[in-house]
Structure formats: structure tokens, C-alpha cells
Length: 383
Image 1 (cartoon, one colour):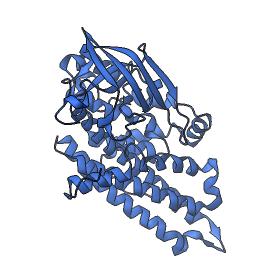
Image 2: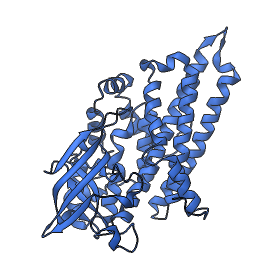
Image 3: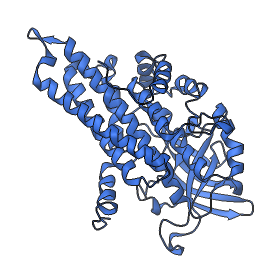
């Protein structure tokens, strides 16, 4: 079956060609060992895909976010897990859009070459959750540096990243006009003294951690943008994150549909292929329609982002629709395979776990619904 891949065919072919070198056996072994796919990420870096968003003047590929979403889609559509590499894509936007000329000159060429990775973002905290304005991590300026104390959780890929985007309060919430004011963003060396990193074992083979920050010293020159405006800066990165993850879910969704369709044609029970039965056909067809629809919202959101237009609603809708569509496709695929869907050798149970994550993270479906109800439909704030 050849589902349409009309957008950016040359880019897709190039990424797909690289991904074919990392087959099912590779991802099964990585998953079984709960290892980080270092060889895969290194190959992406050497091919220039990890620096897709970095302008050519700094040694990157100079691609748009739309094109970056195609890279992520092809990784998951090939059977891989893009959770090991998408962080650099969306973290890059914070530095690109709000970093100083000196910061870009110093860091971007080294990130493009693979000398440094910008894979980690420290935003979420145990007591604040998705209410980012309630974070308790504090940064106090002392001379030519900031001293930071606090705690972060679900900080992914930190152990495989030399740099981290870190959000901290530089002014107490009681001293600002809006609770979203008074937060600042820092670019942090992950090997700095004062970071205690503790891995969180989880359902998916996804490297994520809780981080205890004790008198972490960060040079003042590592402040990104203006002090106190970090929350609005971080939103750029979060919108990019939602759009990129929507693309990953779409890639997963197509993978599930293709897998289920192929199996239902070949699997014969009661002297007929099971794909001849409407009970098998309808869930797969429904999943395919939902993925196609979510795909349109992905491109709309990415286009708005690339045009530097407001895209908060579209980014959230793309992520929500794609995550739902992928999950329904996963269920249809697992049901189509029956007991074989639970066997690791078919990859379905692994991909099933991986795609389920996105109904919860990086933002829950309920929070997206609340956002749309308030900011798009004009309903009263619910929290």
C-alpha cells in the first residue's frame, strides 16, 4: 500500500533512506535494554537533520519548522521513536528567536556540528505540573552570574545533552503584575556543579529525569532575552513542540494503518482474508480518515509558525487531533493482529506504548480543551 507522501518528496526520501539503516531489530534491542539510541541520533546529526532549523550561516540546514515536522514524521513512520531527538528541534526555536547575536554565534555552529546537543528543557516541576506560573525554582543574580535553586521533573534527554533550556523565577510572583511575568530562561551547561540528575523509569523507553538544583551558578551572559520575559519566550518553543509531536503522531498513525492493512490482507481465517470482514475494515478506515484530517491541521499550524503568526490554538489542535488519531490507529492495529499484536517481534506493542504517551505529554488533552474553550470560544476560565 502506498499512502500519499506528496509533500517534500526529496526530503522524505532522504530521511527515509537513513531510517532504513535502523531496522526493527535495532529498535527492539534498544527498547529491551532501555538504552538510548545513540547510533541513530549520531546518524541524524551527521546527516544534518538534527541541525535542520539552524540557519546555513551557522552551519545548519536552514529548514522551516514545516520541513522539520516532515523529518519527525518519517522517523516514526519508519518504525523508529522520535522522542530521542525531537527536543533539539523545539528547543532550538527558543534560542533562534530570542537568543542574542553572541549566543547564536557561540553555540549554533557547535550544535550544528554535533559537538553540542540542545536536547533538554527544564520547565515542569512536581508541585506545579502544567501550571507553569507556579514554578518554585528561583534564580538570584549575584554579580556576573545567577545562582539557581529548585527542582524539575520530566526533564528528558538530559543525560544525552550538553545544554539545557532552564526556566526559573527571577522575581517573586507577588511582585509582578501578571503571574506569567517574572520568569526567565537560561542556557545551562548540563555538566555544571549543582545539578543532581535522577532517572525516572517509565512505561516507554524514554530517557527522562527529575533534577535537583542546588546553588547552580550560571553566567549572566547565558540569560536568553530579557529578564522576566521567559514565559512568553518559552511559548514559542512549546508551540513548536506541539506541532512537531503532532507530526510524530501522524507518522505513527500511518505506520499502524499500513501495518494493519498489510496484515489483514495476508491473514486468512475461515478460508478468507480477515481484511474482507467489515469488522476489520471499518476501524482501519476510520483511523486513516482521522490521521488525514489531523495532518491538515499539522500543516496549517506549521505554516502559521513559520510565518511568525499566532498559532497557539492551531498548535494545540494539531497535537490533540494527531495524538487521538494515532491512538485510535494503534488500537485498530493491535486488534487486527489479535494475540500477535502483543508479541514484541511485531513492534506493535512497542509503538503502542510510545504513541500512548502523547495523549498525556507534553500537554494533556484536557488542558488543550480548556485552552480552546477559553481562548477560542470565549467561555469562562475553568481553573
